[in-house]
Length: 70
Image (cartoon, rainbow, N blue to C red):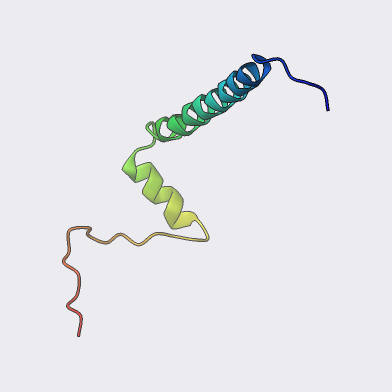
């Protein structure tokens, strides 16, 4: 096995750390872009789309209390 110079381990660590940081920042950038894709769609357009789809959504109030458990 070849003998490593003292600074080689530090440089390898910094390179790996830089790659991890770049991948993490790229992932955050991609995932943060998804909510902005749907901002131009109104509730009426969304409802019309899902009512015509094979899998639909039922419109129910979200503030209704949960049924009591027995």
